[in-house]
Amino acid sequence: MSQATLTQPSGTQSLSHPSELITLVRPAGTFILVLIGIGLIWEAIKIIFHLDIKILPHVSDISDALLSPIQEGKPILAQLLFDAAIFTLREALLGFGLGASLGFALAVIFAHSLPLERGLMPLVVASQTVPVLAIAPMVVVWLKAGWLSVAVISAYLTFFPVTVNTLRGLSSVPATALELMQSYAATRRQILVKLRIPNALPYIMTALKISATTSIVGAIIGELPSGIQDGLGGAILNFNQYYSSAPARLWATNLVAALTGILAFASVVLVEQAIVRWLPADRSTL
Amino acid sequence: MGQSSLSAEIHSEPANRSDVPIVAFKGVNRRFKAPSGGMVSALENISLDIYANEFVSIIGPSGCGKSTLIRIAADLLSPSDGEVRVNGKPPHTARLNREYGMVFQAATLYDWRTVIKNIELPLEVMRWPSARRTARAKEMLDLVELTEFASNYPWQLSGGMQQRVAIARALTFEPSILFMDEPFGALDEITRERMNIELLKIWSKTKTTVIFITHSIQEAVYLSSRIVVMSPRPGQIVADIPIDLPYPRAPEIRDTEAFYRLVSRVRAGLHT
Image (cartoon, rainbow over all chains, first blue to last red; front, side, top):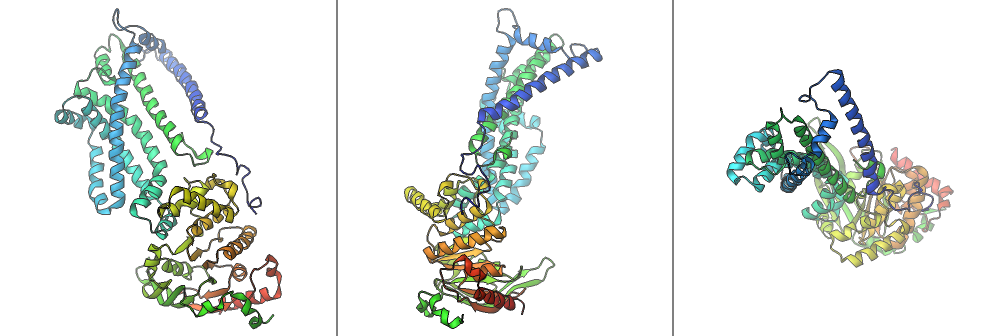
């Protein structure tokens, strides 16, 4: 009987997930090819339209800028930007943690109380229509410029996608899956922990991928009114002022900021692959 | 084969018949709000007593309220009026006491749990200690002959295997009643026939009282000790047919004349 109804030959094998490393290496290889392609198109545009260095520097101008010191006797730009990226990443991580926790908590509350969802969801949506640039200076005044103010500004950008997606995942539980829990006389808390949250995990992971990148943007923007010089925000502000004399430095800074965002995104993908292990390999996401 | 000559063999404990019914419906009605605004009657004046160790199939055309009936007994829906007793108690009390197991048409396994963890789910909810839970789940896996699939995820199993896991999960805490809402309705005919044989084997070992919803006449006759036939909406009971074929029933019984006669009787009931 068990053999007869077995339709998948892989039935007794362990999960057919390729190792996490491979699932990251393959897209990374493709990504490098795309980068090379963009570099070629970049240079072609520069030649075709005779673009000045201020409008579009050579790829080599940017790599030169990265490898040369910004002043005599100082470390090279790449080193400086690496330190700045680590600094911003730490602020962003705190903001991401705050924002994701707040976003998750709101979703759980909303999933259990329709009046609260109806009452507060419009405010949550409204909060996202106010540009972060308008909110950031107020946060700095309230909390004093520093780590916390930057993290809160970053959290402000982070929580919204987590709330919306988690709520969707918590409430999109199949009716019979819920009836099953009711037939066991499960408590609301058991239904939340054993059914709603696991059911929401793929949604939550999607939200965290969005939030991981916006938390970097939030931290960079948060550094500006906070007057913090050590992060990528400070570097962008600084090299913006000297753009006409050294445009490649700002381009290099943007490049590092973009790479930092990709790093944040990829970290969430790794966590997702470690947690959401039950999906067939072809349904896992990157 | 005369019905009376066999009837003594059907119930190993015929005395149960005189006992308190395990599930009792008395004058149960259920109305739903129709999308157009008015009320639609799904069940009308249902009175039905089901006794211990019976395997009762409820058969009827789609939309006749069979699922509604089982959901009322399981306290997942409430009747509009009438009285329902499960083990002599209101369904709500029986549900809180975990006196029944439930199997749906879709296996409703939790995707994120392995087969064994799915079977452990009700025991987790009931706060069994972990070691006892695992031991019990393993016994259930043996019962449904899926021992080697303990650590597989649901998507790796065929539909029939998934449904066997669902049956194991429903029986793992040894409820006295098993509600089955068209459990094999989504399976192909060949798998369904195999599942029927399996289910009878499991039932002979557990002796749970089973209430089984189906719209397959053959399936109902093969499995049941009794078949309740319902009319199209609003669902009413139009026939109550004892199936006097002796258990254990070999699969070949489905080719006997006695079997065909019972199939004809149920069909006649459905078309009155």
